[in-house]
Amino acid sequence: MFLLKKLLTSPIVTVAAIATSVISINPSQATIIDSSTAPQATPTPTFNHQEPQITTESHLIKPQIPVINPVTTKTFPAAVNFFNQFAQTSLNTSSSLNLADTSQVEWLPNSSAPVNFYSDNNVKPNYNFDEENSSADESLGQINSVAQFSDVQPTDWAFGALQSLVERYGCIAGYPNATFRGNRALTRYEFAAGLNTCLDRINELIATATNDLVTKEDLVSLKRLQDEFSAELTTLRGRVDTLEAQTAEIEANQFSTTTKLLGNLRVQTNAYFSGDGNPQANVQYNLFLGLLTSFTGRDSLFTAIGATSSAFPELATNNNSRDVGSTREGASDTTGSGDTLNTFRILGLEYQFPIGENLLINVVAANRYRFSPVLLSQFLPYYRIGSGPTSAFAEAPPIYLVGGGAGIAASYKVVDSTVLTLTYLGTFANESQAGGLFNGDYVAAAQINYNPNPGFFLQLLYQHGYFNPGNFGFNNGQVFRGNGFVGTALANRFDDAGVLFDEASAVSSNAYQIGGYFAISPKVVIGGWANLIQARLLGKGDADIWTYSVQAAFPDLFKKGNQGGLVVGMEPTLTGLRTDIPYPKFKNDTSLHIEAYYRHQLSDQISITPSLTWITAPNQDANNEDIIIGGFRTTFSF
Image (tube, rainbow, N blue to C red):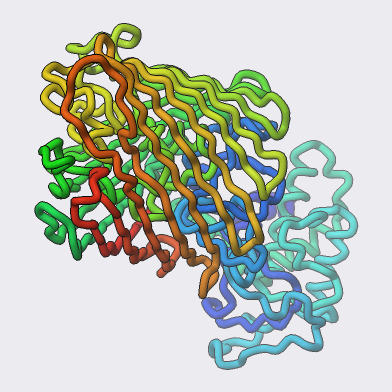
C-alpha cells in the first residue's frame, strides 16, 4: 500500500504533455550529449488557425498572376482565392514550375524551397545514419555528475526494467517521436519521458480496478525507477507547465482563430522622359488591407480597404487641337482609387460560399470589381495584383474597370475544364443619391472560362451595362469619376458634357472580350486579350471603343523566382462615333502601349520591379509628343 500510495501521489505528467516535453528538450540546454540516431521529435505545434487548402492537379506555368479558381475543384474553401494572392508570400524556387507557381512572390501558399527541410525547418544530418555513424559534440556542455547526467545504456538495469514494463503493459506503444527502440541509448530525459508514460499507464490500470494486472515486482521496479529519475521527472513537469502557460498566452493574444489580416503595399516612382503637359517625376503608393473570415471552413467573408496618394499627371490633354482632358495611358497600377488625400476607401465587402459541389456564390455589398482579389480572380484566374507589369492597363483587361458596386456573382462548374460565371453589380449601396441596386448604374455579365489543360486557358465574356449621364468610364464606378484609370480621355469622357456634345448622355453598353494564354514552355508564356465596347449614347448615337494587349512572360529569367515581361497593346480608344448630331471632329490615331518590366525578388515578402513604358500618339493623336516613363516599383506583402 505504501508503494501504491507513493505512486499515486508522485508528480505525474500527462501523456499528452510527454510528447511536448520531449519536443522542448534541447540537449545543449541540459548539457547532455545524445548520440542516439533516433529521429528528432517534431516541433512544438503552432496555434495559428490554418485555413483549408484547395488541391488541384499539377500545372506547368502561368503568365503573370496565377490563381486557381475554387469552382474547378471538388471543395470550395472560398478563402483560398484571397490566400492565393495575399496570404502566404512564399517564393517558389523549384526547378519545375507550374501554372499555380509561376512568378510566385507574395500570394501563393506553401511554396517549395530549393532544399526541403523538415517541418521544424531544421536540418537533421543524422536522421538516416546508423548509430555507429553518429557522433557526440563534447563541447556542448560540462558534465557535473556522472550519476546524474550519463546516458542510459541498453545494458543498464534501469533500461531493462523499463523495457520489461513497456512490453508487458504497452505503455509506449506508438510513442509519437519513436525514440525508444530497445537497442539504442537514450538520454536521461528521454528515458524519464518513457518512464512517466509507464507511470501514467499503470495508474490508469489501478484506477479502473484492474490493479490485479500490476504485479508487486513491477511496483517495486517502478518505485526504484521513480526514485532514480526523480530529478528528470520534475524537470519534465516544469517544462510542460511552461509550455502550457505559453500556449495560453498565445491563444489569448492571437488576432483571431477565424480571421486573418493580410495586406499589400506598393510604392512606385515614375520619371517622365517626355510628354506634353506636366510630366514631372512623382512617387505614388497604394496600401491594401484585407480581413478574411471563415465561419465554416468553406465560406469566407472578405473585407478590404485601401489608401493611396497616387495623383494622375496631366499629360497630352489635346486631341485635334482641342482640350478633351488628360490621357490615362501609361498610368501605374498604384493609382488605385485615384484619391490623393491619403484617405481609406472600402474596396470590397463580400461573402462567398458554396452550394453543393459545383456552385459558388459571391454576395457583394461593396466592390471595386477590378480591385477585388476575391471577385476578380474568380473571373480571371491568372490575376495577381502588384507582381507583374507596373501599369494599370497591362495588369488586367480594362473591361473589368467598367462598373462596380453591390450585387451577386455565381460560378458553376459545368465540367472539370469549364466554369460559367454570371454577375450583376449595381450602384454602390452607400450612394443614396444614385438609383440604388436596380435603378442606377449597373453591369451584368456572363463569362465562360475554358481550361482543358495546364498550359492553355481561354476566356469569353459578355457584359451589358447602363450608366447615368457622365458616369461611363474605365473607373470602377468610383464617385470621383474623372478620366478613368486607363485609356484615352475620349474613351472615358465621350459622354461628358462639353467634350463631344453640349449635354452629358446616359450610356447603354454591350461589351465583349476574348482572352487567354498559352504556355510555349515552362519558361515562356504568351497571352493577352481583346475588348470591344459598343456604347449607345441614348438619344445621340453610338460609339465604339477598342482595346487589346499581347503579352509575353518569362518566368525565372536570370534567377529563379524572378520574372521578365513584355507588353504591346492599345489602351481603350474611341475609334468611332455614329450620330446625326453635329460634333467636333476628333482623331483616332493608333496609340500603342509598349512596356517592358523585370521583377526581382529580394525576399519572400519584398520585390522590386523596374520598368520602361512608351506611349505612342498619346490621347489618340499623333501630333502629341510620345510619353516615355521610367518606373520603379517596390512591393511589400504581409
